Length: 228
Image (tube, rainbow, N blue to C red; front, side, top):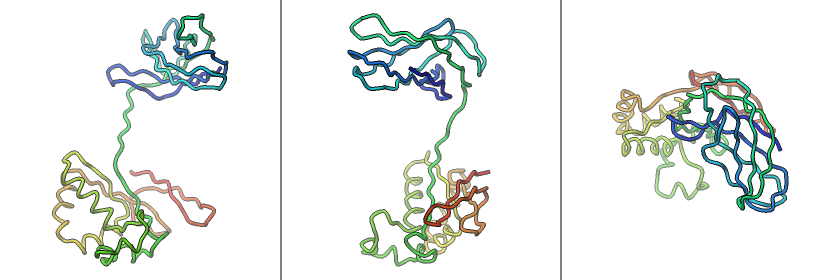
């Protein structure tokens, strides 16, 4: 049996529970409840695991009953109690307190990456919008215009929708080809619903972020970008 203290939390912001990952390798004759208890730690909602001989992992949400500092190692006991009420398995462990208060914001974004199925210029040709053009492509092959349009349409119908546009060298052709979209592009920028970011792609600096570059086995470059 092993225990991993994570920096992940579940539950509402007003009552977060730190996730502790418990790997149980002992055979279980029936389903069992897993909880963690100790002088400063408790489990509001035990986790139910299946019976059987195979190893299982339970992610147990715990809270601390007294103010503790992040990084503090708290003694605790993991209890794996059969649902029938039979005596539980018990292990003495240590749980490390993680810092709460972090919020992750998921911002919708897409990466054009066109050259793998067309040229850079071909990716922004207006013929791609003609009826029947999609029949010449695979279902997942969409033009730059399709992608920008999808985000704009979502923003028009949902006032809370916000998104990021990367690689402005592909946004300019859309601006030129579809002047009727310019009003909404300007409006969403003013309202803070569009953020334009960029980076370094295939040696051309067209964005405003920092890229860590590497090379894949097929010699195509990829980048991990951190927006500033």
